[in-house]
Image (cartoon, rainbow, N blue to C red):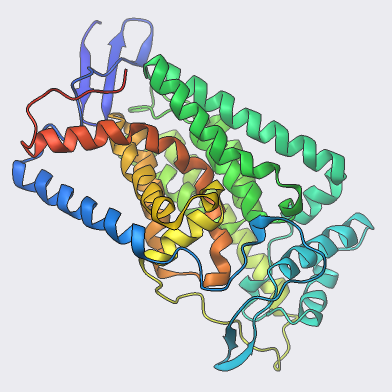
Length: 410
């Protein structure tokens, strides 16, 4: 069989005995080519407005210190006040979060059971234990205790190198030009390199976010059960979800994509993972809830609707974008997300939906002091900006504001 199968998500060729394999996408092809002029112009206007807004809205709470600036001598107080149960309380130093997780790791390393001490320990440090979801899953504490300091360093280096290698291979197999492949892989390295910050090894989002970037790089989207590769990506996602429940949107998108592409076995695996996760989470919450006392204060709400600053601040403050001026860092987040649409394959749409989906979640949920949630998605976003020029060019051509063919940076 030598028939070619093309769709708007990418290009696939079916050859006898070889199965379904990726084929190069024509340089002039963009996913915007079939858009009506009015829609392309509306999208351009919305993108322009978003870029302007992202350059002026705050990406950090005024007076706050980002813990990504490194370890400090003693606790560092943050400006402003927080509220618990409607009553103002002094805002906690960011590094106290790390101290709590380090104590948990040390006690597990001594042979203590996580569930026998975590609630009293957290309560003693004036951290909420009500609701039970405020208490982290135990996976990372056991892993860090098992690895030790040297093992954690080795694991961080191995994870970063693995992310770089799998993305280099993924882009190469997709037929991305050598120049664009080098640019995108270098950006993936910039995103993943933050995982080498030893001070934040106890932070759950640091590892889960790296594992999501690894899983995304390992994954290949098949069609009707053929041409895809997902087992290694599945294994990385299992570990990410076991470390931090905020990995669930990524796993859910994997399941939805498999269903959309009619990869039934893969869809069943991702769906089963979600079911097992909820069962495990329910057990975790039941154990913690049994130790919650009537007098334990309720955690400050997470649903705070910060809007655009919530999305931008989470990604900027939990990535190497924090070194950029405010007016550059914000638009960079937007272009990282939008840029994935310039990769005219199913993988490009998946990455766009993933980055945009987390963006919407961050706009709706998370306080200013939850900015580190952005580390869940930041490592997987950076490579997207390499495709932004092509995405923008394609949109401009579709809007009939330029007549020249799209240049793909090849």
